[in-house]
Each structure stands twice: as C-alpha cells, then as structure tokens.
Image 1 (cartoon, rainbow, N blue to C red):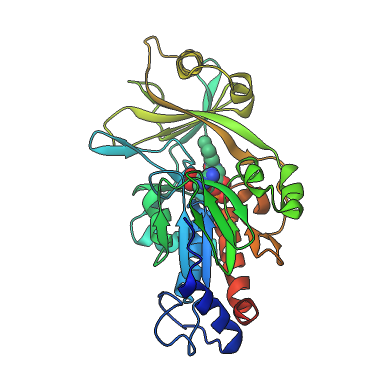
Image 2 (cartoon, rainbow, N blue to C red):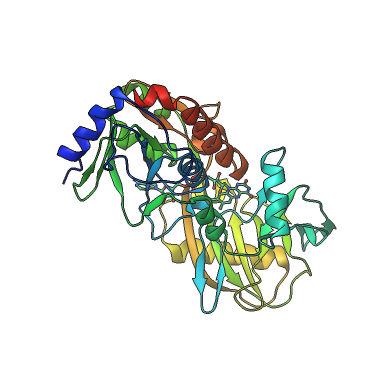
Length: 357
Ligand SMILES: Cc1cc2nc3c(=O)[nH]c(=O)nc-3n(C[C@H](O)[C@H](O)[C@H](O)COP(=O)(O)OP(=O)(O)OC[C@H]3O[C@@H](n4cnc5c(N)ncnc54)[C@H](O)[C@@H]3O)c2cc1C
C-alpha cells in the first residue's frame, strides 16, 4: 500500500509555490487551503529516547510526525517490564547528565517526581573481599516507568507501534509487511547501527558510515533474593557481573542485575536458562548468600552500548532526505541519544523553508 496518492501529489506540488510553516500544532499538509500553508512531514524509525525527542520537537514546531517502532510501545533501551501490579526495568537503570540542557531537564523531571537522585546507598566490592561506599554523581533513577518518560517526549507525534521497518528509501519507508509510507520531507532513522544497516541498502553513503559501528552486548536479569548487603545499588568488582539495582515497584527483594560485556560476549549464543544459571551462581558468590536466588526474567541486549560511535550528533544524506540519530552516532548513553534527537530537530526546523521548496 502506498500513501502517495493524488491528494499527496497535489500537496507536494503546492510546496514549491507558496510555503508557510505552521508555527504551532500538527495537522496534515493537504488541507482545503493548500496554497496558504504546507505542513512538513517526517517519518521516524525507532521510538527510543532519541527518536521520541526528535519527534516531539518537530511536532511542536508544526511538523506532521509519524514514528514507527517494532515494539509494543515507546522506550527502546528505556523500556519497562510489567510484573504483577508493578514494573521493573531490564534496560538502562540510570539516567545521568553531564551538562545542560539535559541537566536542567533531569532536575525538572525530579521536581515532577519522575526521577530521584542516586545518593549514599551505593556499595562497591564483593562479599569475599569487602564492601565500600561509592558515589554516583549526577545519576538519577526513574520513579515512574522509564518508558513513560520517553512516551511523554513524543508530544503530538503519532506512534505506530508493532510496526517493524524493513527498508528506508529516499523520503520513504517500507514496513516488513510490505506497506510503504512515502512522500516525507525527511526520514529519520533512530535505531542501533547494526539494526539500521540492513535497512539502508539503497542509501550507500549512510550504509558505509554506519556499517563500521560496533556495539557491545549486556545480559540483564531480574532476580529476587533475601538478605545480602543493605544498599540500593551494588557495583561489583567482578569479571562476570557489573551492577545490581534494587527495583522498588514490584515487591520486596527484586533487583535488576546487569552482566559485564565480557560475560555477554561469552554467552551470546546460549539459552536464557543457561545464561541465568551462570549469572545466578556468580551472584551468590559475590553477595555471599547461602541460598539460591530466583531469576524472574532475563534479556540479552545484543546492542547495549556503542563501542565506536560515528561522532557528532546526526548524520544525513541531504539528497535522499534521510538522517541518522541515536547513540550509534552521538555516543553511548541516554544523554547523548536525547541530545542527538534535539540537535537534528533544531537543524531541520532551521532548514524548513529549504525542505519545503
Ligand atoms: C542494560 C543497559 C544498561 C544501560 N545503562 C546505561 C546507563 O547506566 N546510563 C546511560 O546513560 N545509558 C545506559 N544505557 C544505554 C542507553 O539506554 C542508550 O544509550 C539509549 O537509551 C539509546 O537510546 P536510542 O534512542 O538511541 O536507542 P533505543 O533506545 O535502542 O531505541 C531504538 C528503538 O528502535 C526500535 N527499532 C529497532 N529496529 C527497528 C525496526 N527495524 N523498525 C522499527 N523500530 C525498530 C526499537 O524497538 C527501539 O524502541 C544502557 C543500555 C542497556 C541496554
């Protein structure tokens, strides 16, 4: 199915004649008075924090924005797992900011009760050696589901969930079920580089730059145990496990435990049961627990953190009207991903007249 139809073509032709951007609010370009206004249209692949933030910023500037994500909702590596009446996160446990503008945003989210700073209750070490108090400067933990933090960034953008994109073409995307959405003024790809590369076969310039970017994996587990050291965050001095973060919303004793990259690389091809058993046994030794821990969920993040991001905030092929954002471009972490979405949106809004011509 294609959305290029007579109405769409008429709308496109009008752009070169007279173009005035809507200062606020969304709305479709092909309205009755087409000669007076043209609303720019963007498709964004990926509703993680980079794509959602870019989408919301463009929508606020008056663009019509459609976001496509293969998952059931927004969030990406900040998504949430529902457990009974509560939730837990297997993705990024922390959101941190080194500088403005994200630092001010996090303070605002903390004032709204969406985040709380990580303070004091952080231990580092292992039971067989010793535990020491550790600091985590400028780190926050979500107190609401992190996926909600991402969803609110979308603003007036329209999210197509469970919509896996199979190919990106100049001004167009194709879903895996064959449906094509086209006639966009800009298509933005905001997914981890190794997942983006197969979609970019028709865009050799972007394909080549992204093909070099490698990511490192992490196995994440939700584990429940009694006892152990009194803390909310435990940073392990260990080759297998990296950190455990207490989850407060889904009953007592629940923790998210993240492996090291080395552990995940060694257990890439194994079953969830095998990885869980190995991680649980490592954890017992690290915590000095005499009884087994329950593993309630496990997830392998094949593309957890980029090892050699492209650099800058975004990458674009102006001729084909396709741009790339996310941590594979801007660098590891939530802050860089958020900022890449912001910077691209600002650049697009500044170029609106050129894009509409
Ligand atoms: C276990 C773990 C721990 C981490 N810890 C930290 C930390 O402590 N601090 C920190 O700052 N960062 C941390 N990170 C990294 C941080 O989560 C990411 O850098 C950031 O969330 C990336 O955001 P993004 O928008 O670039 O990508 P993502 O969040 O990955 O969003 C990409 C979206 O694209 C969608 N998608 C993929 N392929 C397709 C397709 N073909 N079609 C449609 N949709 C598609 C996905 O479903 C996803 O929603 C951690 C990550 C992991 C996995």
